[in-house]
Image (cartoon, rainbow over all chains, first blue to last red; front, side, top):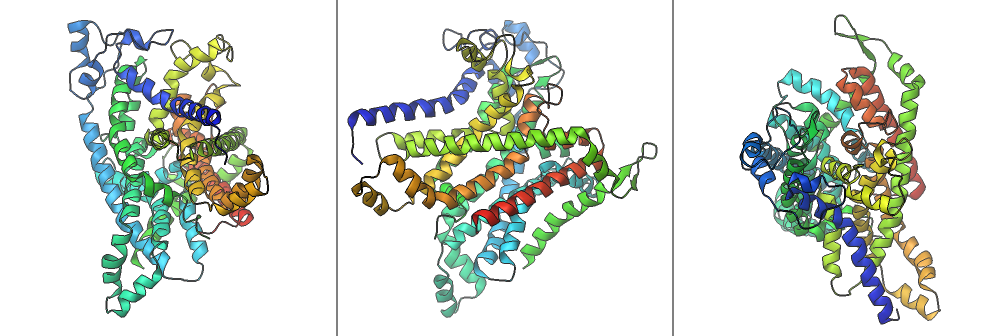
Amino acid sequence: MRSNPALGILRDVCAWAIVLLFVFPIFWWILASFKPYTAIFNTTPVYWGFEPTLDNYRVTLGGVSRLSLITDEGAAGTVAGGGSSYYSIPSIIDSVIVALGSTVLAVVLSTLCAYGLSRFRFRGQQNFVFWILSQRMMPPIAIAIPIFFMFRDLGLRDSHLGLILAHTLINLPIAVLLMKSFLDDVPVDLDQQAMIDGANRWQTFWLVVMPLVKGGLAATAVLCFIFSWTEFLLSLQLTTQIRTIPVKISTFVTSTGTEWGFITALGSAALVPSFIFIVLVQKHLVRGLTLGSLKD
Amino acid sequence: MPVIALLLAFGVYPLLYAVWLSLQERSRITRQFEFVGLKQWGIALTDPRTWDSFQVTLTYTLVCLAVQVVLGMAIALLLDTERRGYGLLRSLMILPLVVPPAVTGLMFLLMEDAQFGVLSYYLKQLGIIDPANPLLANNSTALIGVMLADIWQWTPFMVLIFLAGLRALPKEPYEAAAIDGASAIQAFRLITLPLLSRVIAVAVLLRSIDLFRVYDYVYVMTSGGPGTQTETLSFYAGRLFTLANFPYAATLALIVLISLNVMAAVFIKLFKVRF
């Protein structure tokens, strides 16, 4: 490629403009979480010149009641709110339990399954893999209905375990395919070498193959975590007492008004863990998401 | 393998249950399920609302997919360079992916708000939308409003995958092409696209599966409205579920599943995707 400095600058400008356009909604969202109500509800966009406030965070994370804010300062919530609580720490704890639980379960199961798929050839293998993928084609609502009844009979409704199992179920297909593509990158020769040296299949798997796919494992785990962290429909339909963060946020849209300040505050806080994780495993994730289609 | 058995049990049971459910009817009086054979399927196939929502789903899937593939490819090409600062740009680009879809919906709801929305404000300034017709409250534009959220969130996914593909490309064909005097556009069309075809196929497959089942954005942003203008199949099924019409909801969910299976199988045959 000939390098023309003017073209290069044009490219920089375009690239920054496009990326900033994509980042803008998040920026706007976080900005709004620090705004008093009058600045959120302004007919022309407000970028600066407002009094930054932590009120939204104090209510959602600090447990300050919304009412006391109104009486103390008269600042927050000119919109009449519903009777629901805005304190969200219990929701965050629920989300953490469910996300961690389902991530661990999904990663363990999918790794074992993917190892089987990657190392053994059997009849109808392509069909079997397609079948796994087709599990993902189930609309979540199709899973929600049977699970709803299943859990009701098993007494798993409104339990952390129930939601963990449900999220694991949804995560498994993509996790298996991801892990398979990572495991396929490890040459089979290594396995055979280890087996010749007297290791059994389990030792081979645990001591030889696993260390080589650590990065892939991390990427899969992060993907599962983020999915569970952000999942909405199942959490909404299967639980009433346990409220994961996305469901909690949706309860801030009340019949008497939408509490944008609290929504933006909790939403911004919920972004932090996912973003840290995804940046950490970005490289491996990119490799795995192509599901091995990069090989010849 | 015990694990495969477990997956089977986990995956097949809900499916069978849904099939069983779709053959039942919930009695208004006893609230018990009664076997009615294919009645629900008959209702589904003649229900104009099902066909409307099928059409909405298909439009949504195809438009979003086209925009995301083209835009994703363009941005991936733009960012695929060793120039300074592009590593940061690539990291920033994946930010939208970690936002919970329900939150994305709310984000765009706030931005597209008729009075206070920042997006509506600029679109009005540019004269693209008419102040009297808010984006989400208008029959012809509501679906576009929802699609914007999807496109914002998932174009980065395409960029991520295409970038991985672009980085893995061999250098030699481009050097040869440059010597032969091929233009950049020719090089892209004749070298990049064929070499990337498998990556593109996988990306399209994964994305269309998710697009066809869209629920969150619709639920949060429009609840299918105005009227049923933005009601997708998944959302219609979800609405029936909340109305406790479980058998019909299960039938619709199975229709989504069957359509997707057929489309994916055809796609995989057509583009020879292998796993």
